[in-house]
Length: 324
Image: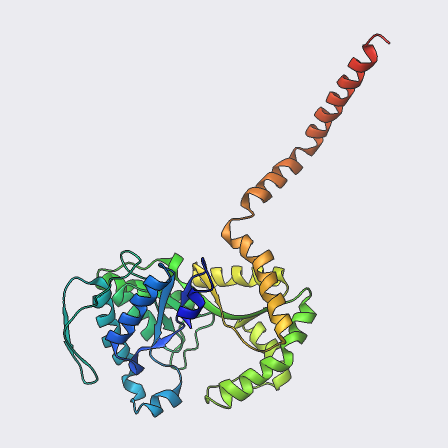
């Protein structure tokens, strides 16, 4: 998919969101990603995770208790292969490598961006800190064992990074959130009310067996918004929601929207358009100069208008003083 998209685009960055590392040989992951890095001329990003779907682990006969250990083993090898400092030899109970090197080195220097998903436990942020990668977090951590806030997640990652001589960068931290926008808040909620209920009850709960809100299906969107798990409303609501996430996290660098087919195609496209037109400029600095200029002009409008009127009067007086 990334290779096909690369041929149809020029500037957009393309990433895996995510490759479940226990289901793949690490050498093959590294080799494919470096090739894609060259095909895209440095526009590719590698997102990894342990595998969130129990059905996948069952199909591959993988013990769920081993998935995060397997991801750690795999990611360590992948980072060494990307580094290219020497042949990699490694033996685990699920893969072996002997004097392994990549023929291509990453197009991006020193390496292509790597991000670890953090969804249901601190394992993701621990691995990110250990290997010096960025993090993809849910806007509200779905930790079923212990309560872990976004600020807690970042503190764990920083502590682990320090112990391994790595540095975490907040500007590389992405928060993943469901989002739908419309011209009015009421319209946005109604756009996805049915579809959102189906996604959560039929897929999240009915297919994957994950806990879901104990509310009727047609009230799920209200529940998710009230609990800061989704952002639904107008562009102004979205801006306010992102600012709340900035406060809750202590600061993050990117918002990663989960693409949900919970509304008709035209309404999904309109939501993306509203986000790009009215929300993104607010956080990318595109409006800073414009807003500063408007506020400065507004603060001086009376004196500026007085000067303008004086100039007009002088021009008129000069004209009238000319010999007729």
